[in-house]
Length: 243
Image 1: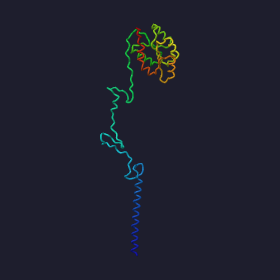
Image 2: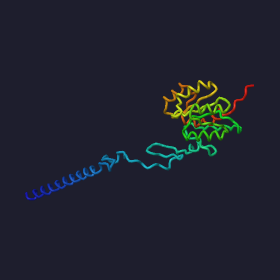
Image 3: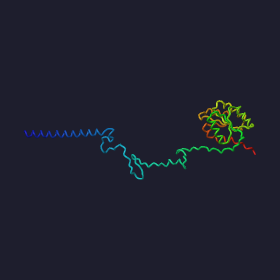
Image 4: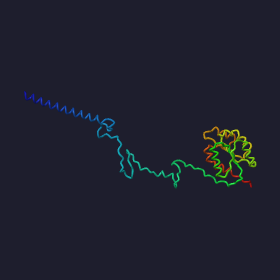
């Protein structure tokens, strides 16, 4: 009987030890699985069959110079477009945008010392005064700056009653009062004289009023500056006698 009790005791010890080993292995496995979960382990606890979400390094040995980024094949970038806007060292502008062309300055008129002024300007802005004077000098055109109607008519009499070909108005010249003076000049000078005004591009109401009082053309300042050489050249030339 003593021997049988000893055998039972040994067998119980072996079963208890095996159960402890199984429980220890299970606990360690669960602990390892929990350690693989979290932001630092993107693969999760799914083992080897789960797809890793990290970015793979590019395959630089692709055929034909192509590169592979996350399953997308891209060809090498062609930088020849940078030279598309250049022709013989001259830039034509940004790709996809229409090139901007500056008008070519016209040929100057023959110089005449006794030439009379056919262009008058009601401009008190110093910047535009200087710009008009410089452009007129290059074209051999004479321009008179006047302050009021009497001043201009005195110059016209000095020119032998020759009617002016062009009158330029700065529509923001408060001293000249363009909106009240333009219709008076229109009635006196009739169709032989062109009246052109310039103003800011945001002054839409003033532009409409200038047309209503008889201004033949109203331009934004930028357009007036750009077309100034052509205007002075055209109106500064003497009229050829009718044959």
